[in-house]
Length: 114
Length: 110
Image (cartoon, rainbow over all chains, first blue to last red; front, side):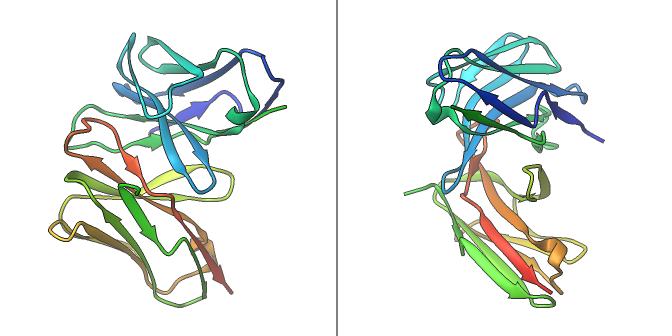
């Protein structure tokens, strides 16, 4: 079974704090994704990584950065958290093989910035 | 206008009813996914399809590529089917990325 884990289920941070969200997958997938999910807006892609040290901006990268130093781990960093970054954050991974392509999601981290 | 539109946004039905959720998209795609999200957040993939029809238990997914439309059907619905159902497409131009609909919240009443 593919397993994608996220470091926290719930997180409360103060405005201006630096926030790290970590995601780990155990299926040797090349691709990893960070999304945020907000009511009425669905899932929106923040960043995408297709290999170690490789990253690509998604639809809403402003205010975020990412790090992928190891294949199994993809970190999302909020350099200076703001209240409008209060959201559900979901990590996903997928194999590069397009025939087998399917995204596997982590349980999500509900982040509140006060 | 979103590239992926789902309808209805909310659906409440009695246990046992036949459920249909619709998804329309505006771009050329290589695949369409149906996902399920239960309260608490976790998302699981139900189907990935690029043509025709797939069935898994009481769930059936169909796609019409020419009409850019897909449907998810649930037969003999049960309260445990209550969840948000999300349609996502893999555009031809988007390599590994998915574009998501905003989801349909389904509630099945016993």
